[in-house]
Length: 136
Image 1 (spheres, rainbow, N blue to C red):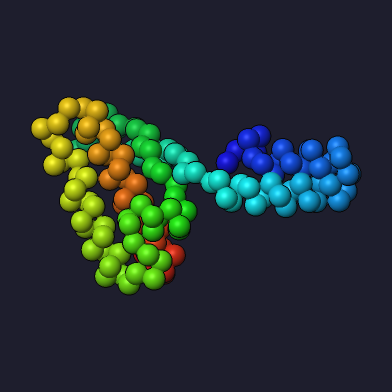
Image 2: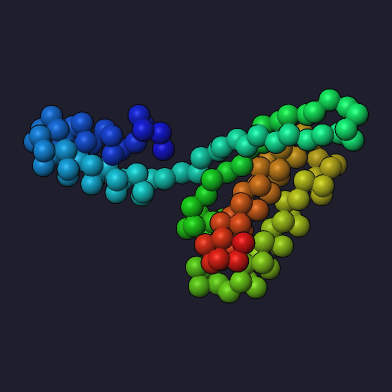
């Protein structure tokens, strides 16, 4: 969350106004708890540069990816945290086949865009889980 919209910042100011030092401390603790309880995925953009055969102009694009926490990653793949690595890969394959953008070629552009977004979320969730387990 952004600093201006975080509960830590808001409750720290309120705590300071009410009880000075201890109010600031407890406001920050309460705000940190609320920030972690109500955390939603944030969309970030990465910069990618591609060269087309060296003869054409470089193409620079901003590509979005979704930042997910570990719990949200398990929820996205629809598996338990006790799932094995093979179960994680199987869940990813099943959902990737279902939401792959190439399978939505006959659909309208809104359905393709939704499928691309869901496919990015699924891929990022798998990467987060495997990275947390030290395999990626």
